[in-house]
Length: 189
Picture 1 (tube, rainbow, N blue to C red):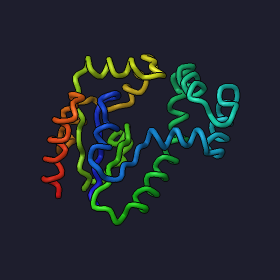
Picture 2: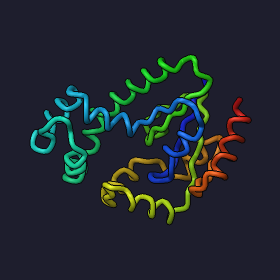
Picture 3: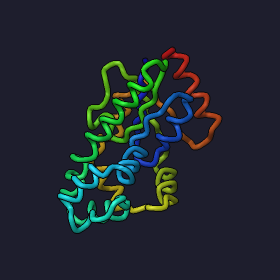
Picture 4: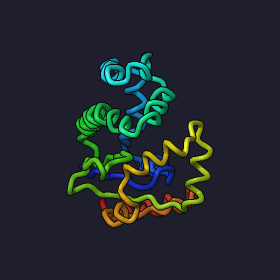
């Protein structure tokens, strides 16, 4: 099984690109949302640390955002609970898809959390900064303070690009993306 890890900046279109490969995709952001909605163990652990902020199940995104913005160390505390659960779900995804030729891993902190193997094919999604900002501002829960907190956790883009074997230039035009992905798949298959 070939594992393709998608990396890039927040808002660069990693999820969009991941889905364009046409293979099973593990989307970490989606898994986090499922944890907040469905996982009572996750809720109990977060509630124990943040009883005033995270006090109802399912966990609302607003309560998570408020908790993160309230104190600089809160994001780290949340990550210590959520990341092992996401890692476990990724392992389950890989087991479920072990007979597939290729799987795509859309994990925002893929390299930072050392979730990659040496044999993984890393694809860097490159987008223009002004287009990224425009897209982020269109998001329902757009919060520049929150985005900056997440950016601080990420490796510099130059390092992510350097660690990648391929680059997809996401100009948000389907035609060019399909061409780049086709070239990547031809090279790795």
